[in-house]
Amino acid sequence: MKIDMSPEAVGHRLKTVNELRRVCLSLANSSAGREVIKKNSKNKTVQRTLSALGSKK
Image (cartoon, rainbow, N blue to C red; front, side):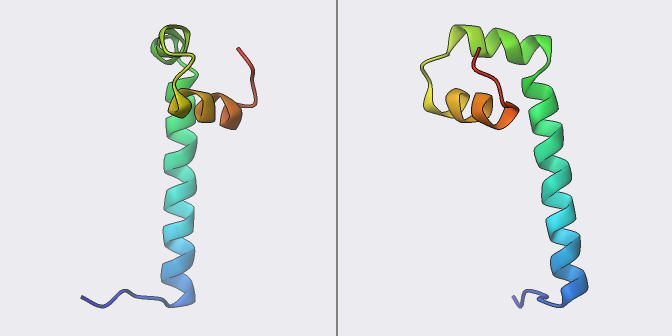
């Protein structure tokens, strides 16, 4: 399998990754996400998400 490394393909992948990142952070900031943060505040992944959200809840 060959990966398309053309500038257009790389740009498209970067755009897609950024969109997915924004969606994930939006979900983390939802009521369900806040509940997970409250219950698992010591979890390293939760702490990284909080850092990405720019908050120190």
